Length: 288
Ligand SMILES: Nc1ncnc2c1ncn2[C@@H]1O[C@H](COP(=O)(O)OP(=O)(O)OP(=O)(O)O)[C@@H](O)[C@H]1O
Ligand SMILES: [Mg+2]
Image (cartoon, rainbow, N blue to C red; front, side, top):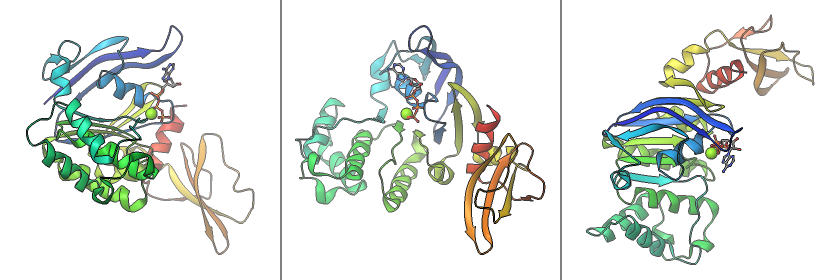
């Protein structure tokens, strides 16, 4: 499968441009992390890809097929977990997945697929519970289970790890990597650890434009020499220059240690190798 996106843009009304000039190619196997600040356009981009929204300009082709001209071509290959996923609260987990399987046109092997997705998402004990009785994280798992029902070639998940506890998050990442050899996964997240551990490609979206497209190592390289730590016993923290930001504070014996990212670091700072999170923060702050 090959996805080609050319000159994609989206505006909500005449004044509200949300995406502009997006050109991207995707090929499996790949797990692509889509990151960016709130309002950057991640959900809008994903909704356009799954045909929940129409683009203002541009074209999207899957294997040379325009997704607007053959929606079934996309539908048969797609699994999608929206950021805001409405569940039928009165149904049990099994009933809901059965219903979703029907909508997806699954017939042969339906029961086995549902059971396998229930098992993979750790919902076996809850399969006969009504959705309204589940916790937030358990509901999120039902959303993930429905996205995997048709063993999709293209899996698009919008902030899938929100609400999952740390152990579940690890399990979820494993689930994504388990069947990734034939799949293209597009995952949006604010949790850098998610992308760090599983994504081989990162796309940073900021104000509707692509700020970075490459692998995590390339991103980290961009921040080399722009990250340092500074010890300070002053309660108000260090006096940092414009263009620098404090990304974390660590309590140490003598006071606090501040981690600072910026183009021109303050004097007296001890340079440290950038983490992926530092590099992301560096790029975002530099883009203004
Ligand atoms: N239906 C809509 N009508 C008007 N503006 C919208 C609509 N949906 C989204 N927007 C605007 O489009 C921009 C991008 O929103 P989007 O939901 O794509 O961002 P996001 O990157 O997914 O953010 P988040 O990280 O908060 O989920 C925001 O400024 C938002 O206010
Ligand atoms: Mg979003």
